Length: 83
Image (cartoon, rainbow, N blue to C red; front, top):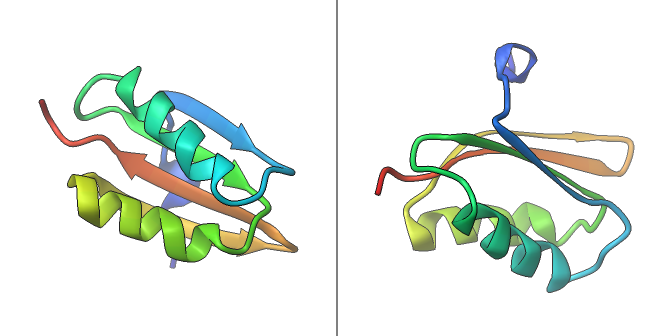
C-alpha cells in the first residue's frame, strides 16, 4: 500500500506537459532550492520520468520515498539528502 496519502510535501514541482529532459532539469533546480530533509512532490506526464527520476535520486543520493502512476500522470515524492 502506498504511503503517499500521509505524505505532506514541503514543495511541489508541476512538470505536467513537459517532455524529457525538461522535467529532470526543472527537478535539479527545484531540489537546489529546498533544504536537506525536505520532501518534494513532483507531478509529471512524461512516461520517461519513470526511468529518469529514480536514476536522478540514486545518482545524487536523494531518497525516492514513493511513486505512483494514475491515468498518464506520474507522481514522485523525493526527500532531499541532508546537507
